[in-house]
Image 1 (cartoon, rainbow, N blue to C red):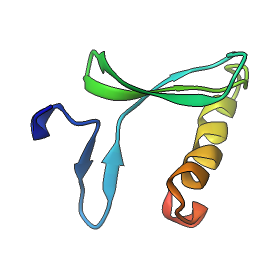
Image 2 (tube, helix red, strand yellow):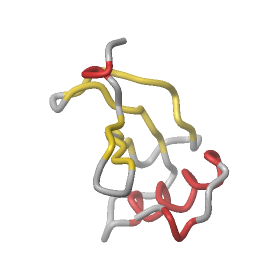
Image 3 (tube, rainbow, N blue to C red):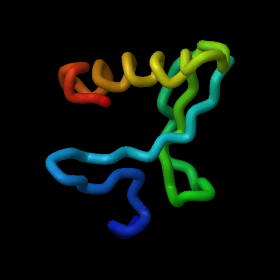
Length: 75
């Protein structure tokens, strides 16, 4: 995978991560890297139903734990 095909990129003082999120899953996980319309992305699944941003909030709460970084650093 070349640097142009990574699911992250450096931003101004941050790292920007591309995630393809699937709501209403039976499990919560990050399953690796997949192709997407915008380029390669992490494939993630959450149990939350797609209402009022719940899947996005659930992902933002679970990624920092998996990456061992403070929640305050994930926006």
